[in-house]
Image (cartoon, rainbow, N blue to C red; front, side):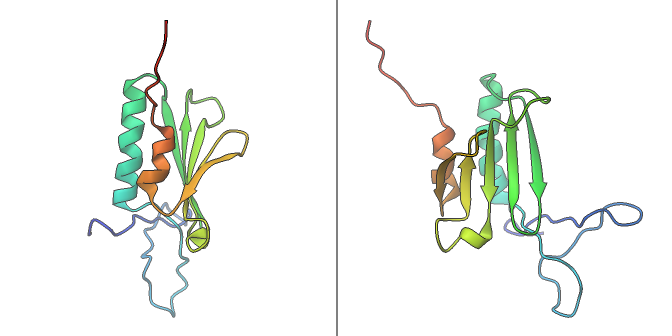
Length: 130
């Protein structure tokens, strides 16, 4: 498995999960699903680890589907997500495949480069005058 090869799973089949090759032959009935590749997941988990260490975030969920992949971040496991990091390949040529979505559905940042889009989640240094 190479570094850029995505990890993909099919929906539940009889007996459990079955891995689906994203580059299946045209004659097969395997469905293409959108996933985060290793570099993307590494960048997301890097910022997630810093926020967990700071005590701001506590839990996450990953949803994969045919048209988009979503990494949701939670403050508590029983709440709604604080942020959703979405990858929608259909938008790659227009606004960019990656976006950060707030709980109310407002798109905070959208772009072609995941690292640049993730910067919106970083804490900014503020000057405090006394």
